[in-house]
Length: 365
Image 1 (cartoon, rainbow, N blue to C red):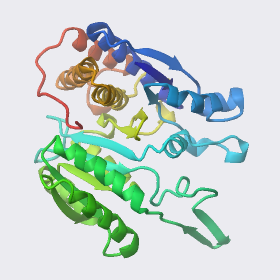
Image 2: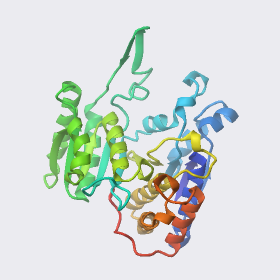
Image 3: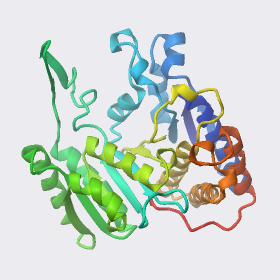
Image 4: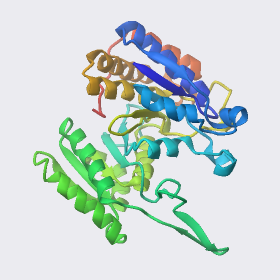
């Protein structure tokens, strides 16, 4: 399996290094045949090549079996005309990575919830209110005059149908329930179109229950009654916000894995940002990117019918659970004692010599 590695900015290089250490440990145990090619993006490539997303990277992506993308500091980039391209957004649009899959599962002693959470948010990834990526040419956000700013929300039948199908296919392998989250009581046309397409797809999955819920209520029920959810499908911005909420409620935003998936390409990407304030200090929690990389292995294993890749993914997830179950082997941001390198070393050791796992993982599968 050939993997393109893009370390990114801020803490990106540190947590990417830890992630590769863990993948190499899994490769050693399960003979996964992993091969890595690393390329600079972000501020590093801006300095050396005049762009935050070199053309070579765009050429390599479809040639690989998967991509690991570190967090990027796109707020600090210059304009697009000066080479400042948001790699995350550009990759999603260019390769039609329409599904952002974000599982959240509460962990003992880390979650603030009184009831268990085990859900997956399936977020539409290429349109919605994200004005930097929802137009064919130009931006969906503009200022007609100095005192007025407008932003266009784009919802299409095609985009809604394909994200709905991804959610229902996932729900078939889980508890067979999909909750479509919307704000159709206010944005009646665009969310009305989204719901129309979700209902059409639902008709092809009679064994999966469809629920519909306004986004306000969803945000509240994630706290009050998280165990009512299995798979949540929603539009871009709602999915972004709700998945961050769910990850934090389950233990920490730093514990949430994520993949960006299209019909042919999958990119593993941590849920959190680049945290430049702590970069270079060996204190960043690499869990999110490690779990994202495990999700990438699982995706490729299921796609290519390669059981070893699925086994490797499960081993990584189980090792993360094992390490997080002990306060002494957690990172400092969640009350532990370890830094970035120490945590990944503990995960590697757990892969090589696994102990009892708190439970079989696979909540995103």
